[in-house]
Image 1 (tube, rainbow, N blue to C red):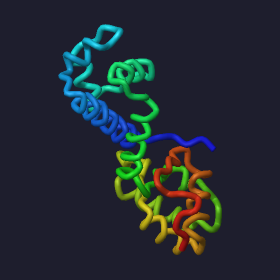
Image 2 (cartoon, one colour; image 1 turned 45 degrees about the vertical axis):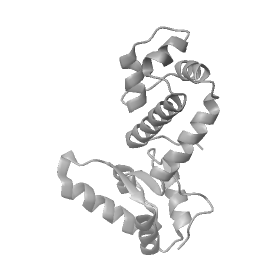
Image 3 (cartoon, helix red, strand yellow; image 1 turned 135 degrees about the vertical axis):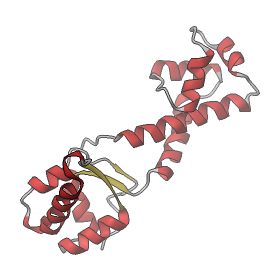
Length: 174
């Protein structure tokens, strides 16, 4: 199954990656200038600063080069980043309200009414992508007369924004 990632998740990941790069560099006792001295390619101190702040995304090739210079494996650094981001983005499902409104599954009528109301209240400028935490999913599942896991599976299938983080197939059920 293919999952998309919302912009907030990309931002959280970029910041966590930057923090790990900075932390690793500082553990070596290096300044940014010293890191640059160990790189094979030429990049600016400002570029390194934007990677470390999470304001700029680093290519895989550049990440591997930086990791090599600091004598760490990129996969180890990324594993630390993944662990951190899971803690920061746990228990969220981003749903597309417009798709929920268009859906005709009878079991999802309460959810469809909620999505219609949410879109209607905010008018035309409403954000159609809405993150739902586990507590909201549990309540909605109860209203729809199904388990939380069943609702999550249906929403994953229904919405193109079905980015799941932290909510596992073995997760909570109502």
